[in-house]
Length: 258
Image (cartoon, rainbow, N blue to C red; front, side, top):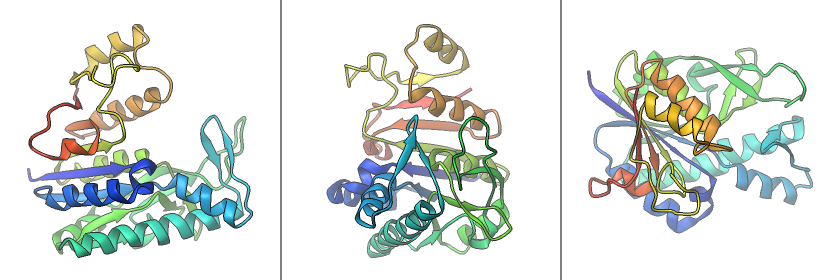
């Protein structure tokens, strides 16, 4: 089976021009077929404040009302996505910018209201992996922003980590898929205060033991839950670390397998 890499970058890389430039160079040099997924929450918050739209967060998650959705669509789907696509074209990579609505590629359900009404937030229901593959087979490199749709004309704000894992699950019908979650840390850390205490390999057994010891906690909990969900649904490996893990020289990151 041919290999496909799905790379996700977060807001800290997007916000810093030098980091973004360095990352996009690494991404364009990455061998084989690939897909890029990006967020842009920090840029959206800053644009919202310029436009007088209040950003409401609960437990670190954004409440997406109609005004916020407009800002997110402009920032993620326009400003951030098109800048990344233009820079990749400048590096000789034939990138194509997408939301989940384009080619009906990522369908979501609006998150049901339980204790909190998150507004126009989507939970991924279906990935049209054959449509995405049509682009890949045409030598395009898809660049997804964190927006999906409900199939009835409504755009939805969707977690970029989830988009990366669900796209990887969908594409695993056709490829051997690996996910690279690029963030500011070197990987999953044994000690949060020691940046070099990278746990290089986590499998189901190690994961259980790390949970029991409380080493995996807070924001890392949903991230790893997402990872094992993807691995149980066809993804072959998941890697977490800083952008240097996209180079052959660096092996100081975390690889997660079953």
